[in-house]
Structures are given as structure tokens and as C-alpha cells.
Image 1 (cartoon, one colour):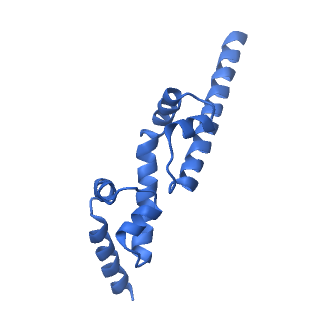
Image 2: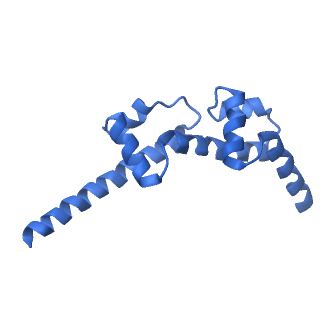
Image 3: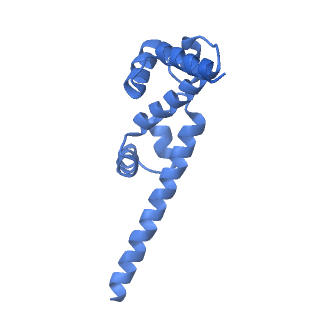
Length: 130
């Protein structure tokens, strides 16, 4: 019974450490999404290999680190599109997308709308609220 207790405690310690790693990497992605992040950078942040990091991240979030990064970038770009008159290409660049076509495809895949359609929709909604 004592052995079982030790194993449970070890498993809880491992899960706590994994959760800590995940929180650290998610926080880093959310504050550095506009930068060119690499898998090596994210993995080294929590002292794991790239493979270990990817497996851990996907096990806890259900998505790859770069899928999460793109979602973070799209969320921030959608807020910028709704609140500013910056060009779409500038918004894409400010949110970490190096290619406007990749930004458009990713935005469409995640939101179901193109960035320009999203901006128009948000403008209509904001005009009706006034």
C-alpha cells in the first residue's frame, strides 16, 4: 500500500510538472506570438526535446504548439482588425504572419471568414450598436 502511495505521489508530481511546463509555454506563446517562434525555442524554454514538448503540448491542449500559436495570432489580429484601420497586410505582419496569403488562409480556416469580410462584419455590428 505504501508503494502504491509513492507511485501516486510520483505521478501527481509528474502531472504538476507537466502542467507547469504547459502553462509556461502557453504564457510565452501568448506574449511572444508576434515573433518568429521556433519549436526549438519553445521546447528549450521548458527543458524538453522537440518531440517531448510536442507530445506534451498536444496531450494537454489537443493541438500542436503551432496550431495554438496560429490561433493566438488570429485572435489578436481579429481584435486589431475590428479596432483599427491598419491595412490587413500590416495587421498580419504585426501579429507574426510573414506571408499575407498564409495569414488569409489561416484566418479563414480558424474563423470561417476572410480578414476583410471579418472587418466589414465587425464594422456593421459596431455601426448598429451606436
